[in-house]
Length: 451
Image 1 (cartoon, helix red, strand yellow):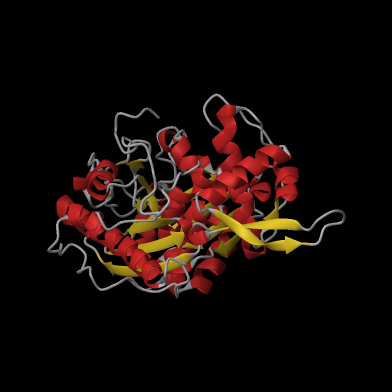
Image 2: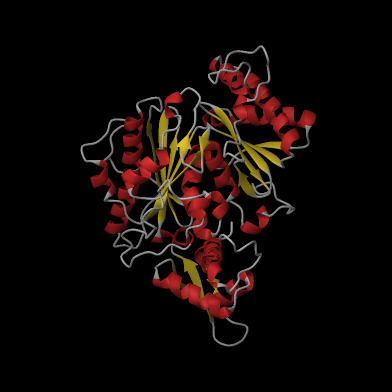
């Protein structure tokens, strides 16, 4: 969460090494303030920075187009205070959810709002190059559509949304007439691309593992291949982690601190997100931070064995909860699927002592009440934890993938690999005057970087 060597600090500090961290704190407060904005004295009070430091940071943010004046407020003494706000259209992030049979792409602005989205068919079991071509095409369509809309609006960023992307892309896996380099050259205003897919995978290296049912992805350098093709930073993570991140970031920074009480509408603290769609997995938020494990492989919830002589799972084991759940879904017995999912959820709560269990994925979305009730009953029998449907709907994973890129801009560096979080240019991005493209280290996507 903090620049290397800086150590934790509850407030800002005037040390040069923390310049990017302090700027991220200011940006985060500007984002939280929304259109109403926040004054410089308020920023100084809430960050612990000196008024002079806040003035320098906000001046730089305004010069780079990230902040703008939002009017004036009456003062209790002296002249009225100038209020500043974030400029959401100053930058965007692309989020891609690679499911086993479809690809969902979203474009988020700096405020985390979805300005465009699209779902198209995808065969994750196809040749890797065909899948990469489909992913590149979706990413470029996402960026080009937004750039075209902003250009048509005179650069104001005032465009209708969210909506679908333009029609320039074909169906997933079909490729396109233009080369990827030519299409990628049209990307502008985009900080990076977050990609979420089924696990297991090595998040730090950006390499999938033996994805259940798709062993051809094992060891494929997907993150670096996409980064080279797109010319943008790319972050790769599991679909369940991306969703959990998106849920965790819906709350203010303070409410995610350990020991804080949380209202029923938030998702801070410690929770488990269970995703039942074409597979079954979990995303874990512990102590207010996304937990990936020592080898970034945490959350393979679907492959806990709950029936020793059960049916064979695609992973090779018998009686995996994923196999039992999906078999029940296939025969139309959603009540049984919810009961089995509840058994696994209760095991997880007993092991990790999380506050809540959130449910999502397309199967859950199709029968939300059945799953919330069934899992809730299983939890109630063994724990005091409730089950709830996760907010965000069908775009939750893709939006969480985009947040993998946006998080460090606002000081939420725990949301990305250490190699990205340590980059000052990512934490405090520097945009050229015409905002044609963000400035990042040239080798940001290089596998030679150390974690």
